[in-house]
Image 1 (cartoon, rainbow, N blue to C red):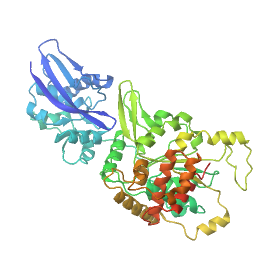
Image 2 (cartoon, rainbow, N blue to C red):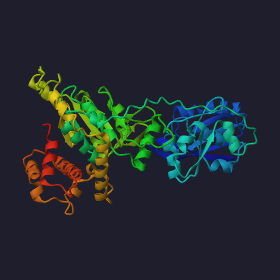
Image 3 (cartoon, rainbow, N blue to C red):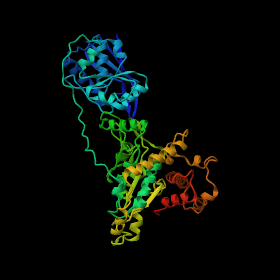
Image 4 (spheres, helix red, strand yellow):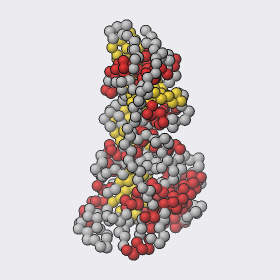
Length: 509
């Protein structure tokens, strides 16, 4: 009994595993069996393969066909295995060369007419092919441009199963078919946002520049209309372009949700702003059959903005605590688990009370004290302890507006400062595996090499002794003080930088 084999990829999150696809034919009652832990959509591939081969003029071998997906213990799902299974079956029958099929990894969904339909997640799949050491991959024509973004891999585009069989040596005449195009609902590009549009909030603007420079998390509290959302939306604009590795991760995540790269890797930091009614699965990720990334993963290397943060469910907010510390999020389901990057900057915005008027000069707050405490208390202490910068944003008056219009900071100026600080911090952190001040560990900052003099940290030490801050807060203030020092061009933080960092940390009690 002859056996033919080829290869495909099983994706779990952004991680791809090479799957060996074997096919054999037995001289018994005709049929097709797929084994190796397939899901329902993969089990239905037998019907697609039979129709696609018949309509492509490719005859399947007679008898009972058995297709094995190895390793059998690895869960496999989706229709991306269709092409590899069909090629393995045709290789058993001798229509295509077995040695040719064994050299190529195949990805593609078959239509009943034999044409190959485009897939989502091609970029991370081809990346897995390259990392596994394979040098050739065959994909649907609509996915060729995306697959070619991975260097070192020969990408073979095929419009149909017949084209794929001809490439592997089948003696068939080519038929010109219209390839199935990929339908992508792209959102319109937003207009560029300028930081200079923010008026009357110099302290908040400085805080956002510091957050961008050091990669720090931010919380803003202020009445409606004070400009919290306006400030948050401009944070991605002042962040530097993505590094190559980050650009690959962001592009892979977009490919996984059906937004393939448009001819090039993503270079700008992403922005995610989920609605406050979102569930934990929508924020963290999940899915009944295939695990999909949530907003936290889609915001990796960018900004996750939670507007009206106290309106989010408490369990949703607290689910962010682990990603904020680890920089990754792992979603477990009964059929497996998937790990996604989640190194994002968190920006929270909140009103000071349910009615939003507490502390305003021109408004009357109708909320009792208990309601005010309970409202902001929805953001738990452990989550708040992970926020480096906490800013009060006040409602703008006409006097403040006229003053601020004279010297607003533009996006270009702010990004230039941010890039300079990131370069300085990257040079200082060289060899540690960190690139921003917010990533540096407290142990390293308090090591003999980096430890600040007691005369500089005396105010911070007293605050820790009195219980005003936690040890985590102590380390986060140290990180923020290094960012403030870098913004001022100082070699190391001074007592003034520590004081400013402590004020930004405790700005909202």
